[in-house]
Amino acid sequence: MLAVGVIFIGIQASAQSAKFISRWQIIKGQSDFGGLEEKIAAPNTIKLAMNADSLFVYREFAQMPVLEERLKIGAPDVETLVDQKTLKLSGVNWDKKANQFIFRATYEINGAQWVYWRTETWKVKGELLEVQRTTIMPDKVDRVKAVYQKVK
Image (cartoon, rainbow, N blue to C red; front, side, top):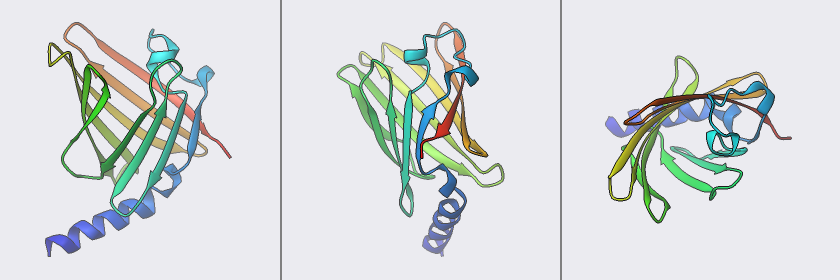
């Protein structure tokens, strides 16, 4: 019975989240980078793909390495090595009531000497993707709203 429930959740998320699956380009004029430099505040380009139970996320920043992740929807967090000194532990859930993805991440830099937590909410509004991000660090909190348009 549990397996049937997991398959049903995956199919439901897949059907409702199809509008997310695309390549998205940032609209700088509609975004609020919260006082951060644009090149680190939000990816210039996001690509999303999906299979039955996983989301494939490709984030391209201006002057940073491309970050690619495969996250099982609703599953435990997975580790990604961002660079030689940064470990990212992340996961994603589908909020069917709000029709949005909710990403969570914890970053450990230099062997956990500096840790920060991030939550992102991704919602499609018409032809736009809105990403609301909150990052909690030991010394401050950053909030970013990035708006993307679908690349056709």
